[in-house]
Amino acid sequence: MEIKWRKSSKSTDSDGNCLEVAAHRGEILIRESDYPNDVIRTTPAKLRAFIEGAAAGEFDDLI
Image (cartoon, rainbow, N blue to C red):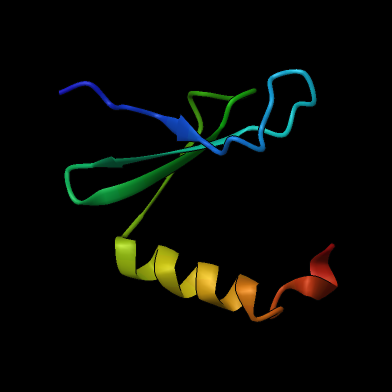
C-alpha cells in the first residue's frame, strides 16, 4: 500500500518549511520534506491532543 503524503497549501518547496503528513495503517506519519526517511509515527488521538495544545498556546514559549 502506497503512502500518500500531504502538505499544507501554505508550505512551498522554495522556503524549506515543508512538513508532510500521511495516514497509514491506523497511524499518523509526519516527516520533513528535506529528510524524507526520518518519519515520526503517532496515533490520531495523540496528534489531536498536540494540535489542540498548540492551538491553545501551550507551546508558544518554544518559538
